[in-house]
Image (tube, rainbow, N blue to C red):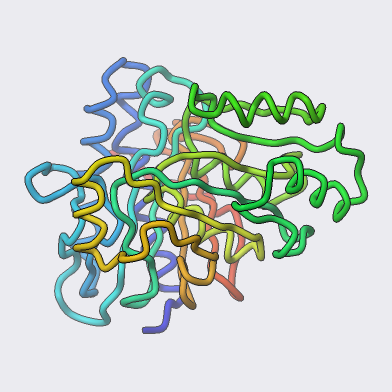
Length: 314
């Protein structure tokens, strides 16, 4: 399948309308309602497209509807087969509490090109294109990774900024980073957007690391690939049910370290529309009886851009 401009335009429309659908619920302290509004809108608009779509990264299993579930078929059933990864609202807490950084996110690829990630944790590391791929590794110590990045960027270690989720599980990493005198950027949620901060020097983040969601890792990898960044991920299976599910999805080496090219094979399109304004894009705005949206769009070898849309209020 050719991932062309027409499809890109349709996908931008989908995340834009999903963001708009969730917008009336921003700040209402109900994250389930925020998520449901975006999810319902995303499903409705995917089903208008002439595609044979299949959700490979979703929000749960079939019995957890109305979420877009793994394995769900989307589209009219006509046209090309594509794999779809979705996170209708990344940062449901952000949206529910009217905090910055909530996004409506999707990625698509030709069938078989997006890794079918289980609903489990992933240990991740990401750096920008100005750092050689072999300079970072999940199996290196934190100190070695930081020193390699500093050397590649010709910076003092004290000038390096590391971004990670502010979680108790990261205490040891945070302690190590403090000892190295690295600048910390601790985020409360949103590890898709957190990973993408390494993609552009304007964000002043040199490395994203730590444990977050596996599905979010695949979504972030789609955009990072277009930016020419480096990324590694390793799934973490905590329960026997996690292991059973992974094996059902064809994952036999439970300790495997995945490179970016193994997570995103070939071409993919990534779209992230702001619900509330954040570092990547502005959130939904209302002016002159219209909704205004901003979407970060990436398509390898084609487009990396912020696309603005106007949608009339009906």
